[in-house]
Structures are given as C-alpha cells and as structure tokens.
Length: 113
Image 1 (cartoon, one colour):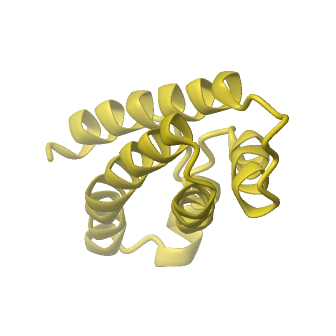
Image 2: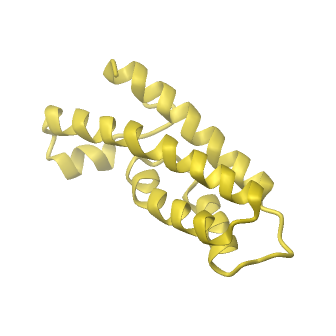
Image 3: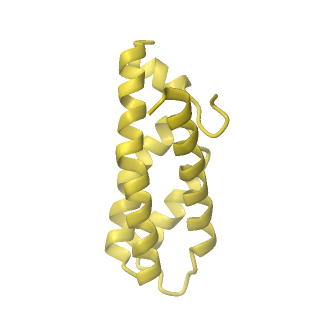
C-alpha cells in the first residue's frame, strides 16, 4: 500500500474520515487516468491547448496523492501553455503516464475499486 502514491495529505484533507478517503480515491480513478489519456493524445497530435487543459486539470490531484511527478507534469503543461514547438516533451509525458498508471493500479487494489 502507498508505494506509488501517498495518502498523508488525503487523510489530512479528509480529517481521517475513511469514507471520504475512499471517495477521493474513487474520484482519482474516475478522473486522472482519463485526463492522462487526453494528455497523451494531445501531445501526440501537437495539440497545445488540450495538452495544457488536461495537465492543468490533473495537477491538484497528482499533487494531493503525491505521485512524485508534479514538476514533470508542469513541464508538459507549460509545453502546451506556451506552445513550445521546439521542445520534445515525450520523455516527460512517459514519466507522468507511468506514474498515473502505477498509482491507479495500486489505488484500485488498495481500495478494492
């Protein structure tokens, strides 16, 4: 448990309410993998706007669950925000996607979702 994510800040936010913690975990699984796929598609298509939107939406949850890739996600977000055509964010994107996939699988297992 909590190998690819951390619950410390989630527990603080939820005031250790186990039902609320489970609800936040479920919300993570509903939102973040879908946003990660949107981000992956946007980067592949050079769609700066949607890359920025997806990364920006993911930031608070990635930060809350402490996936350890917030700075990398911000690099991808800034690529979209500032339309950095001369920058390749493929490597950063792969790091973020891997972290999301690992955390999602672990949260599903840990919370029986």
